[in-house]
Image (cartoon, rainbow, N blue to C red; front, side, top):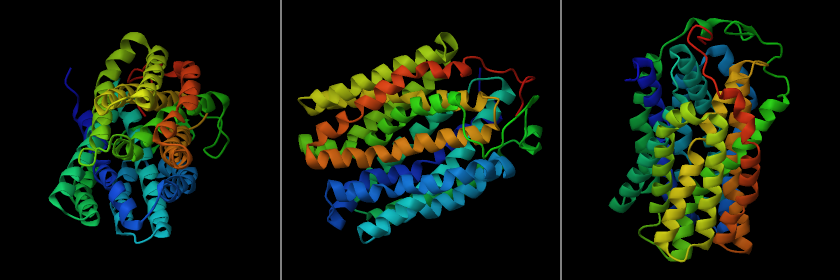
Length: 395
């Protein structure tokens, strides 16, 4: 069945959001070299991203609940376009840290609005959407990385390349955000979700069900962050792939997108728990192949397997968290997004520190323990196994 207009708009904003950030990823080795940073120095600067997330998401959940996901998307695109342009303009590690902190803040706020809106559209239409929406996000970051790599080959400096992508996507993102539908439930007080009465405020501590979902997703998004920041460095350092270093992340992102576009159908057929366990196992297998890879073609196979494994974990977790009845969906998704983004952003510095004292293979192997935890906690996603009908929850 063809997607509705509201579903297509959600897919569009998910695609547009990561384009500029994706164009930054292939330029990380260039910025590292220009600033004269080693693996540990770059890792220290990358910590700015999770710091920005840490400072933003505790306030973003209540704010998105108050202003609505649609307004959060529109305002978030302005903040994001400015922040994502800054890292390539920095002249030392301190300013790189600060600019990445602002980037992490903008990403976390905008993506929270995206996920809450996707959940509301999914419930309003009664059609599974979350995995497909995140598949569009994967296509966006893959397209951004390819465009960024192409611009790099053309000789344009990193600062102007990222700024150009931000300026191109800003009006498109704002226009798509303004066109998103506004459902009656979005105007209700935060204390009501559909027909259910929420007993806890947005500021209360998350319960055990949500914590289990968060711990599951931590290893998945930590893998995504590792591939984003270190795949090019891995291929350059291990296989001396100077001109093709960016292809590793392209392969990874392509398989993430493929897995997400097939995720809604697989979830409907096999259920969220079985799909999450299979994905976690694939992510572990992909990291094992990378650790043992004797050549670049084998390493690319490892990136592909890891991409399939990392594809559906976060979308499944978003639906599970939003379906919990203890607090507003925006608050639960904010907590989940906080943990997920911390995993996405803390993983790269951890890998950098390990690589500094051992090597890049050992750095990627640091993902194995957290992925084992993800596999063990896949059962926590059982809450999302059933999709409410439009009549049950239009929010």
